[in-house]
Image (cartoon, rainbow, N blue to C red; front, top):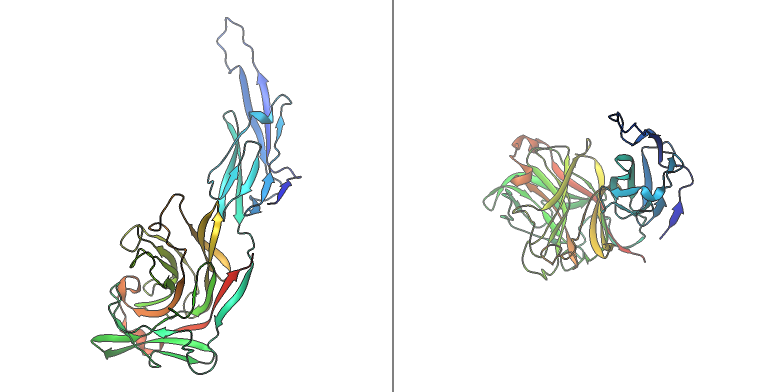
Length: 365
């Protein structure tokens, strides 16, 4: 754990002390001791202090007048999951995020924004599929066929090259408007169950999603063996879901026995202006013993951290079942609760989810 003293003045509290001792027979016009901050400055001239997870920085305030004491200061962090601060002004980065640290002297306070960045974790590539050649590598993937997967999806997922094929170095998952097995649309769902799986590490894929109301492409993970029971008890990790009804939306989510798609599950969504028909890298860092012995899953877009969810203290597998092997799913659904109403005009052009590559990494200690 690193520890360094901040040489430059990070927080300056300039306090002027004005003592007024009124005549006993007069009504005082001021309190006996009046303390007023005349300036608050942060140096270097930035809006925030930036530290890494596990790093420590000491804030050394300068107090005036000379009889003001540092021991009279109290400190607090507005979010102890991001950073903690002790009563000596030592800030410790705990987890990715941004919060405010407050120094208080009586009723006065000075604040500094603290941004904690993820410490650099090292990984080793253990598996990848770059979709070279002219056919799908069946040592890595299986077709999940059928319909009625839940969420009111309208497609029938087929096996073979009608809806999933490798061409020009990309996996193509193509949805089509055609009648098949009682459905009006076909598509494909590929899974690595029992073939490629991981517990803790980094998982990424470079994907281009199609445009059009009713499309619902996804890159997600499910438990290989359902060690804790059927869905949702053994968990689900949604690395990327795109909502065709909202073209700029991308979302992440996890589902557990106690918080799932039936209500109150953790999710995060945000806008990307060029989400559709452009390649982006979506990924997770699935970390064992991330914070005080608790696990976490960090979601990334093009290498940038976008969201994080973590294990709760004293929880059970119903709160955090993510300590078993999970496998990968790549699919393009049509309609459903996130895809929305289908605009059949989108099928005037090919509706294709393209995958450049998928990779798995294990942490290097």
